[in-house]
Length: 317
Image 1 (tube, rainbow, N blue to C red):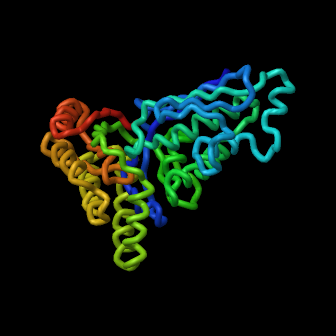
Image 2: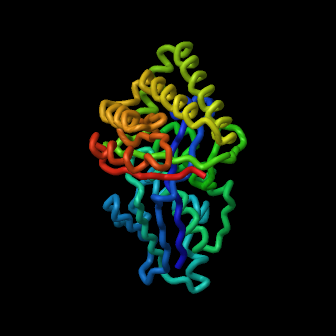
Image 3: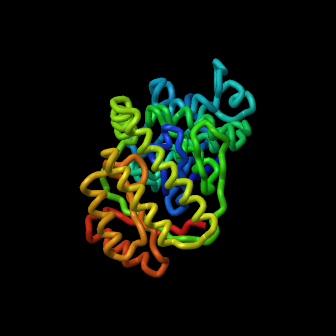
């Protein structure tokens, strides 16, 4: 039996613009995670059990574009009889894969990427096939395409490496150092918000007026660059909060916010947050608020009073 776990993630700055080559900052959220357990089975076949999404099926019954099926097949590679070598070494007739997750689905916390990364690691370890971090990241990105259409790649990257990441699509991965820990309160609207839809809608806006939206994406990119500098220096949290507010205003302009998100963001600011913005694809899902550590419980309580379904207090280190 083998097990693997992968954390959630939250985007601090740069969502949507990152799809168009601008930088984004994201950090792991270890308070939530996806877990995969792989065991030998007496019956033939590869059986997947994911009760969180009500899936209990044999691999052969899943379509080629099913994310879980595609992830499993990517580990086996092109072998025409993927279980033959496993059986030859006395491993059993088949495989059972059990998947669970505490990460809310379609909420901007990287649930799909976390499940994929945990699955790739658990299954490859079970099959005695070692995958490097880069290989896991590359395979996970291909699965992200099935989830999101045209993903930025930031979810799979920050979750694979489980470190703060400064990400520019198509460029070498950069992790960065947090100069001083800071506290984020995450507020969940409880509204499922598939990233694929909001990414597609922003693309339509961009296609209709590329000059305008390139300028907006440039502004977001400059905010992300400035935010990285401030995080690395570990000073002036108020300035970092102001950058969050500015980033959110641009996301509103992209039409990816919502009444529910805006309500939580205003509530956080009124309760003393230094800055707040939506995080992820938008239209639902999560928002984040930068807070002083001692005020985190009060901000979390204000978010619940304003309609949040759950909150997570996380320290970025």
